[in-house]
Image (cartoon, rainbow, N blue to C red):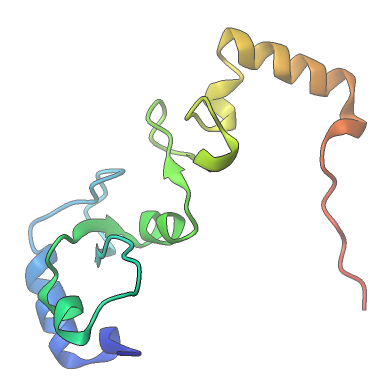
Length: 122
């Protein structure tokens, strides 16, 4: 089943599937791909090629979906990780809400509480 998307058969079916469509998340009309919903156990070759249950996403939204991020419903520009965000908004939109303003104010006053990125050293 590996690399089915590299076959000519896949490319032909995908191009027909996305023709005259737009990204279901952000509305973009370029760089579109069919996105298969996550399925335990994966797909057989035939299921994968059938495109049943697929939605059309742009490459950026498809990448973010595969990383389990969602598009912010407010700005439709930034992404958020639902597992870590009960507000279902990106940080930029969250800090505009009353509770978000309090959280931002806290972190502005206590920058040491923010997770610091680890620098890779060789």
